[in-house]
Amino acid sequence: MTIGLEDQEPQYWRNKKLTEMSRKEWEGLCDGCGKCCLHKIRKKDGGLQSTNVACRLLDTRSCRCINYSGRKESVPDCVILSPEDLKMIDWLPRTCAYRLVKNGQDLPHWHPLVSGDLSSVHLAGISVQGRCISEREAGPLHTHVMPWNL
Image 1 (cartoon, rainbow, N blue to C red):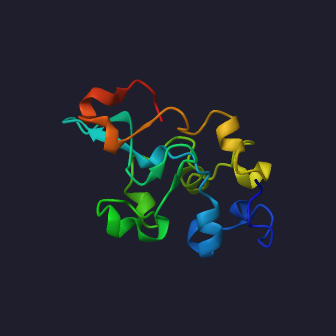
Image 2: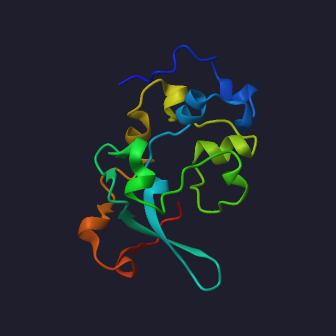
């Protein structure tokens, strides 16, 4: 499956600040890994523990939100990312394009904007596809803490 940003400036993420991107360009940065949709547990010392429990709106096969446009209404604590939010958020995965671009880094070879293929994030083993469970089935979060460092 190819992506729908053919009309955008090639490699726009290299030439624009996050605050200069159009809505379509901003949304295009998301690689569809699903990692940001996994529940995290904030420890008393401020650290984070990752779980394999996904938001109930995450389709665990495609790693896409099943109600993207209405996600905030369905899940009030869903975080809708913006360039301003990135200054305060410490839980985005190391591989997150928003984080990479904010820090002046390039996108990896498996990112759909580089590969031209939406499935490349899954084929590279970067996404949570096949490695998570919906919160509807999970039970207590503390029983799903994972050793992985997202």
